[in-house]
Length: 590
Figure 1 (cartoon, rainbow, N blue to C red):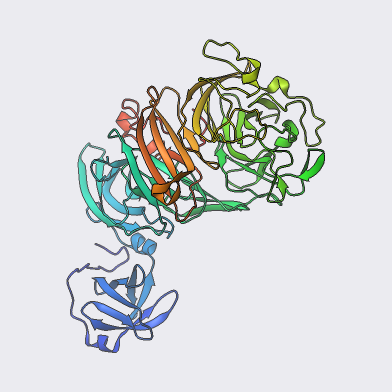
Figure 2 (figure 1 turned 45 degrees about the vertical axis):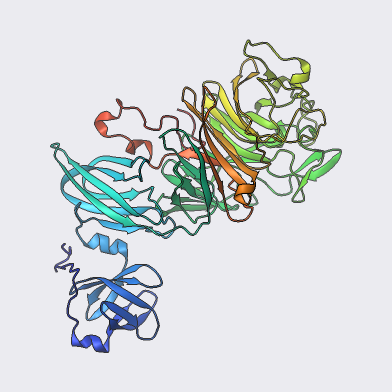
């Protein structure tokens, strides 16, 4: 290995004789301290004024790399008889690493302990295939970096915890020749306590599931990614952290890309966000001192605004006031004047998504169902739910009736159900209005999904039970009709969270119930499912929970690498996506 300045460093992994001067110690200059290190044993050094000790794991005449007993590795370069601390980034930039011996840094930014950065150079331009070996029968995670270059720096994602991970690298040169090597990356356990038990596995497929706590699970009982950033959302090769008063964008390696605060006074409550095709961010939340008329009383409301934030700056682009276009005084699913944290929670928005087919926003409100809002005008396109309480709208209740915006439920033959079904008093084997909903999604081709937590509604005649279900509908925007095409009761009930994921013409429905009772999991646990769409047969089921009675809010399938890294260039249009039904959460359908 060569130092790019003027001197040569030999990485010697055998023990070199220590100079006599060592007995008096060596001077070390760190960013946080300056001290003398003395030898206390073979390849062992300790700070003279402290009990911190380290093992020498790499030594040359000019460089020492130490593995401290109390933390990780650090390197020091000798300058004027003083060993000065050098960061791993500086070290990687100074040395030429090749594919046979690349520079590898686990958890480079201290926030993602199951990811690493790998850097090296090739003498000729090459494209790189990176492969993280799976523990059988799990498949490998493969990424294709298709730009020909001589300088290479890539994220390694999907490492197993407490495991000696094998990562294979293949350089493909422009003349078709190849060069390969493998690297061993040893990880420790993650600090996040997880109960994760696979209950059902009926095929050899493997999908990956993202939770808002910043973990990714596979279908073989392993956590494959973790970030300690907090309440997070995963998008194409990017993580967004929700801090209630602002957002932070991170790379999957944990590098902070940008931070910004919300507009003055606005705050969110960590229930979800969406993305526009231009990457702008849709966020739900509250402006203080806004009120609605409910049950004859003026009450401060919350969770009833949506903002679009500029992706680059965080500046507010648009604002939608949901209380202006819906009825905050509707007493059907939620009881009148329901107070939550001292405020009226008449809608309880919990998901937002852009519907590219209709240039609209799709929202889930736990207390209203699902609604479509025109992106350009802010007008209500339609609302779904028991056909009661739509006689007015507006914060003051003086807005127009919404009866012409309410969807009509139809059967498979296109015939409208009787009034008792439309009003929610009755359900049919192939139709039920959802109550207390989460995670509304526009799927394209007229399909929409939502998680029906179900549970008792305020109106005593509304058909509801303590049995939650994922459900898929087909909605005709012009005719204002809704048809239920897929539903499955889970025989479990969760009053909070939960999610569903499906894409038209794909074989699987994914569902997650957030907090259901389970005596085998010491209280409540979440359950993630993968069902065969045609037969409803469960192909995968696992129970997961956090410590105590804490729960995961949502869980959705994800892919580790963005679309441009999923195929070799010559096969981009000829081979099927190995995970054909997965797109990142809340991305607009293409």
